[in-house]
Image (cartoon, rainbow, N blue to C red):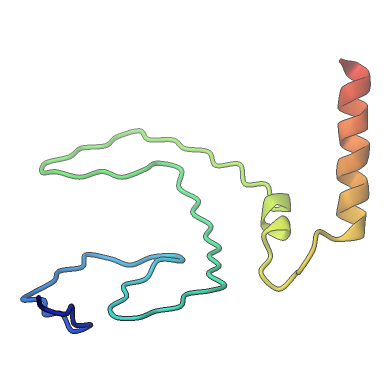
Length: 97
């Protein structure tokens, strides 16, 4: 009977991208406190391929910065003034329904 060994061999590995709170790990790992904040505003999207022709394009992006404030990595909790605002807004919405 053979005893398993902690050593392993990988002939090759190809990684296209690692983003956000992702990681590539080999061996014994203890991963903790992964956090990722990403903001991506894009009014058009992606265009790929050959011989593309875009004419008369119009785009509008409405970006509410209030969401960015909630996801501020330097802020440990939602600010008190924002909690009060959201509570008031939810109550108003409930009263309308």
